[in-house]
Each structure stands twice: as structure tokens, then as C-alpha cells.
Length: 140
Ligand SMILES: [Zn+2]
Image: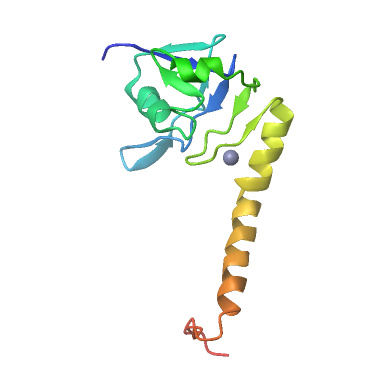
């Protein structure tokens, strides 16, 4: 694999790779150790296929992160600089501090947040009168 140079508008960007890659070794699921993609200044060069794939699929790819070269029309529009970008798929959250990013992850991507969103979705479903609720098969 040839190495690819990525260029970010946000300097010293740190992106936590999500979802964590898991591999099965002898019937046991092994989660890969935590790995962050850390840009040096505007640049990050990698030959790791999964990192290249991850960055190319990132929500900010094409708008804040570029491969090889930043398009002229982006350079001409002066943009503010953030340091952290959320690594979750389809999430475009950016922040200037690690604390704000941690807070965002807690708010949006933690288990508690997922449970809350699931409950909100269920509540919304209950609010639709035409839809019949299915019994879960438990005797009352
Ligand atoms: Zn996010």
C-alpha cells in the first residue's frame, strides 16, 4: 500500500477512530487497542489501509480534510480553526478543546445517550395513534 498524505484545515487535529476494529482470535473477540489519528500541523501521512479508508469516509472528508491537496476555493475562504473532530460516522461535530469533545461524546455517543435516544424514539412511536403496539409476549 502506498502512503497517502491527508491535509486538514484544522491543525493538529486528533480523530479517534470509530468504530473500534475487532478481530476474532480463536473464538475470542479482540478489540484493537485505542488508536487516534493525529495530524502534525496540517498533515497526516499514512500507509495503513484502515486509516486511509476511515479518513476517506469521514464526514469532514472533502470539506475540512483533503487528500493530497486542498482545493483553491477552500483556501480562499478563510475558515476558523478547530482542533478536534468527532470520529463517529456521519458526525460533523468539531471543537476547540478536548474537554468540549469529551462532553460532546458523552452527550451524543455514550451508552446513556443512546438509551435516551432509543427511549425518545419509542415515545415518538407511542405518540402515533394508528400504530399498534406489539406485545412482547410476556404474561402480565
Ligand atoms: Zn459526534
